[in-house]
Amino acid sequence: MRLIIPFVMLLLFPQLVFSATIYGTIYDLSLDKAKDIRVEINTEPRQFYISKNGSYAFNVPNGDYRVEARQYIGDLLKASVSENITIKDQGSYVLDLILFPSLEEDLLDDDINIIDPYPETKINFVILFILILFILVAIFVYIKNKKKISITEAEKKTKEEYEGNDLGQIVKIIKDEGGRTTQKHIRKQIPLSEAKISLMIDELEHKGTIEKIKKGRGNIIILKK
Image (cartoon, rainbow, N blue to C red; front, side):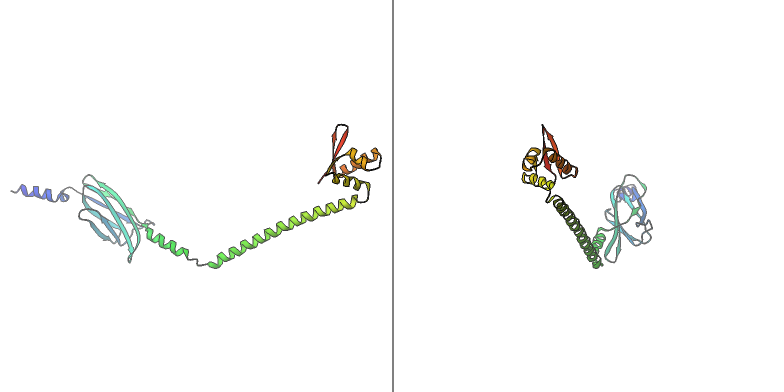
């Protein structure tokens, strides 16, 4: 009978005989010991207690376990952590835990950040952007108009330079022909000697008004734009 009783106790309470200890320290993100932490382990029945100084310990039989630690401020979960551990033999197992801010707290912070405490800053940036855009458009318009004025003045100068003389007559003939004609055609239109026409064409080419291209025994005259 005395031998049966210990055997029955061994069957009913194996955790008292084949048990191990899981212990460790709970830290915050600054690696300081966390205080007032609720620590749990999913044994049967479930074990938990409040760690005041960041230390904890559980006696468990062999098996797979999850150790969870939570830190609360009132009813709000501030930080938590969970780690798995497998116990195969008797002895002591060290499992230190580091708390991480809870997702709920992060989401709450994101919601708070949606409220812009400095709305005037955004408005100032918008005004600055519009002002810079206006300045850039004004510079573009100024450069474009200046270029147009320069071209107009150049055309006016060319017109005044050639108007009423033989050079102007040659330029007019080329324009009337669509900006391209032959030296032979020009000679037919102006009652001057071939040598004189050739000299005037050379002068226009030197001034950059026309371009002369040799073709066969004659020349093609092109009016530059």
